Image (cartoon, rainbow, N blue to C red):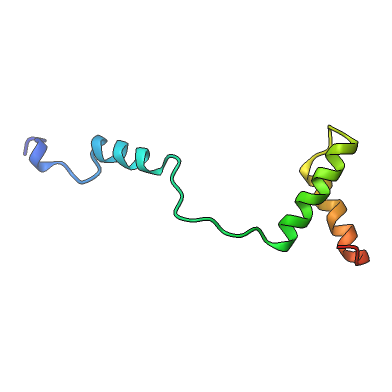
Length: 72
């Protein structure tokens, strides 16, 4: 049987393109940042003030140390 427009399956190029366009930049909702994420962000900003080359991983390690010591 010839491959005509009527016989095509649902995953046509047009449908894929539309789906791709819908996904770009759309959010259903936003979630409040957890206490941990807020703490890491605070520590990250402190580290950035001291050293512009500080990385997020450094902030996570420092926040973990502070939490274990009971400072956070």
